[in-house]
Structures are given as structure tokens and as C-alpha cells.
Image 1 (cartoon, helix red, strand yellow):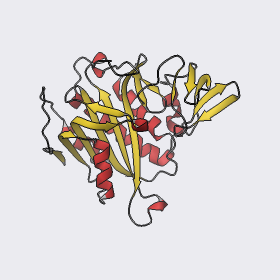
Image 2 (cartoon, rainbow, N blue to C red):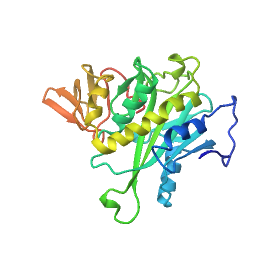
Image 3 (cartoon, rainbow, N blue to C red):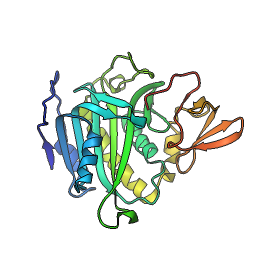
Image 4 (cartoon, helix red, strand yellow):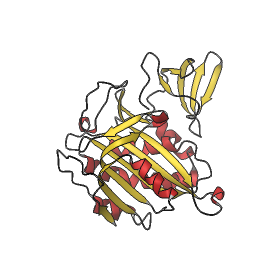
Amino acid sequence: MPRHLAGTQAAPLSVAIRWPAEAIWQQVEPLLPGFTVEVLPELDSTNSELMRRVRAGRTDPVLLVAERQTAGRGRLGRNWHGEAGASLTFSLGLSLAGADWSGLSLAVGASIAESLDPAVQLKWPNDLWLRDRKLGGILIETASFGEGSAGGGRYAVVGVGLNIAPRPAQGLSTPPAAVAELDPDADAGSTLLRLAGPLVLALQAFEQFGFAPFQARFQARDALRDRPVTLSDGTTGTAHGVTEVGSLLVHTAAGMQAISSSEVSVRPAGASSPRS
């Protein structure tokens, strides 16, 4: 059932946020029996909290929302702070038994982008872009649980951060975009309602079929395709989409290379390194 819980420290809210927790629960619970929705006024990180819970043996499916996030984490340890009303920060935790986890962040990105707007693009491996500005990011973490967990008992925590309202660009290496540019009436609650159900369906499809069915969906929104890119080791080339397991194809002077997200970060050539 939905739960609107008090946090250890109440957030100083400047706006009253209406969370459609009941509507989300009704959408998702038939897909994930035992599913709950929790909304906390303040939290260090929704991902960190769910990882703490799974280590304590709590593996029920849950959507955890923080109205204000004080120590959110992005890829490669970068910070992601969420302010009440101006951002949407949430993590979806559920058990998944996929045979191959390659490309999961790309599949999540495709689902979220499709739920938001045709103009939203995907910057490999885990960012949502709007006209070359960062709209949001995805952070996925997993943990084994239970006896014999090596056989497939894993809990996935899918963290998402989106800018709802415009935010200052100072201190950011990639200019920010906001959901409000796409829909002036959007708020954190209505945006979450649009995302939650399709995201669960996408994760269940990924569990069964892997990334392959999402490849074309990602390619249709690929922000880097046919653009010059620079790898983190200084190698330059041209991006040519992704493989059936989600690796980025880059044509370099040494030939075509398939780059995995664990090896490098990527940015358009001539741009500063983004907050992935």
C-alpha cells in the first residue's frame, strides 16, 4: 500500500507536493504483488536507503521517493542533489533474475524518455538529454540476497533523478534542462505517475528478454549517434549506435570499438565532461 512517511528530518518545503501514491500503487501492484509506495520528506539518497534495506534482508518491491535528497549519487560517484518541488528523485527496488544485465540502464532510459516526450534523447550510458542539456540521470545498483543467490537471486535498485523546474547552471559542466520546458503544468507527482507503470513493465521485459528488444528504442533517441565523441582515455571517434548488449560503437582511427559503460565515460567532442 502507499505510505507517506515522516523522515528523520522534515524538509523545508516551499511548495506542497501532491503525490499520487494511491494511483501509482493501483497501477503497479498487480504487476508486482506486495508492492508499496513510500514518500519521505528528506533522505540522503533513495538508492542508498534501498541498498541498506536489502543488506538487512528486506527485498519487497518498493518505490521510494524523497522530496528532498541531500546526498544523492550519480554515476562514477558524482553528486545529485534534489530539492523539494524542483526535482523528482526516486528509486524503484525489485527482485530481478535476468540472465544478462548488460544494457539495463539504457532500457530504463528508453522507458523514461518514451513516457516523457518525443524530444527527450538518451546520452549513453545513463543520461536523459533535451537539446544537448541534461534533463536527468539514472543510477542502477544490484545486490545478491538469500541462500544460493549466485543462481539469480538479485535485487535491483533503479535510481532516477529528473529536473522538474529550471535550475541554475552554475557549477554544472553540462547545462541543465527541465521537464517544465516540455510541459509547463508538470510537477514531480504527475511526472512520477507517468513514469512508474511503464518503467515496471520495461524492467520485467528486460528480465525476460534482455536488452535486445530495447536496442531500436534506444537508437531512435540516441543523442550521440553519428556525432564526434571523445573517450575518457583521450581516443576520438564517431559514435555509431549501440550493440545488442548495449555497448557503444565508436569508429576510431584503430577501427570500430565496442565500449562498455564500465570502461569509459563519453562526451561529445569539444564539450566538457558531463555529470553522468
